[in-house]
Amino acid sequence: MDRDDDVVPIDPDLAPSGPIEASRRRRRRAQPDVLAAIAAGGALGSPARYEMTRLIHVSEGTFPWATFWTNVTGSLALGLLLILIIERFPPSRYLRPFVAIGFIGAYTTFSTYMVDTDVLIKDGHAAIGDTYLLASALAGLAAVSLGAARHGVRGGFPVVGAAQDLSQHAPRPIAQLRVAQRRIRKDGES
Image (cartoon, rainbow, N blue to C red; front, side):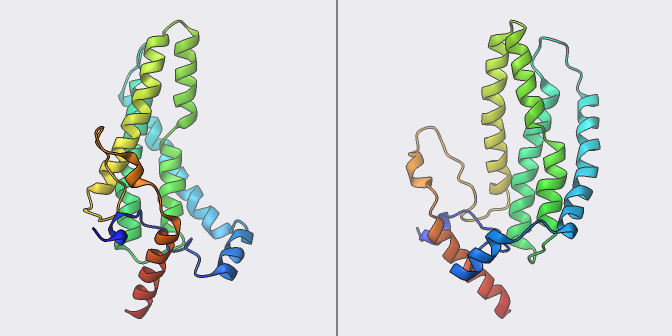
């Protein structure tokens, strides 16, 4: 297997091309136009989450299915869309922030996930709270991996079976940067 085939794609906007470029990117401040893209995505993601919670009724003291399915579908969408955006579309300074931070960030809800878990445990439903805590994390990871894998991306997020050694999927930052640099150069030449 080629080493380039087992790395996670890097956002070309964030891949430094040298030490000066890396230093410049660290000092860059928030940009109003990018913040506007994030806000627009959030303005669409929040009502989507609200509608999801209205579709799924949850009784007090039971498994919080509405939040669970919101976060799992958001994780799936994150895997699908980010890989699609990074691998298939030309670099855009607005699309990734709009989708990943704005829409999916507003649609999913880590805070409600934690509050639901805390309330369940505090109210004497520790088994449900613990199950919810673990199931949400595992289902979210599986969903984002499945979403990334659905595009047939070589080098996407690894879908790891229980018997596989996780150490083989350790990140390789330098190799990832080199792959990103080659992709950026290749895109610039075409």
